[in-house]
Amino acid sequence: MWTDTTRAQYARAGLTLPSDLTDAEWSVLEPFLPPPSHVGRPRKWPLRRIVEAILYLLRGGLPWRMLPPCFPPVSTVRRWFYLWRDNKLWLSLNHTLLLMAREATGRRGFAQCWRDR
Image (cartoon, rainbow, N blue to C red):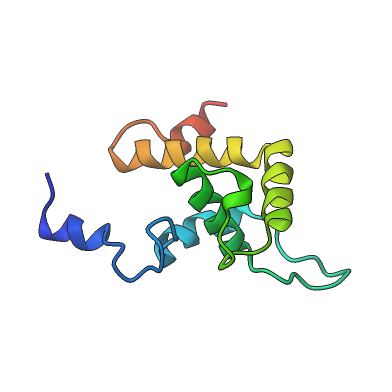
């Protein structure tokens, strides 16, 4: 049941798109993403915007070619998506978020599963 507290917690009114990340959501995801490299040229696009582009496409069930111009180029977003798929970032992120949600509801979570290894 929605309460005033939960409505405020999950409100997405200040975001440009409903699929965009809040600062709280980004603070959970950011530690899992690769840090900037110290060699080579700096990133042209922030990873937050790339993740938001991926979420936009996934949420809408859209093909790559329908990515709006307000996001980074399709080739950039696709390259990061496939890189993270191949190095199993999505899998480990999903698993960690699942364990965090379990802990939040009082069930066995990350800490208990880590100790049992």
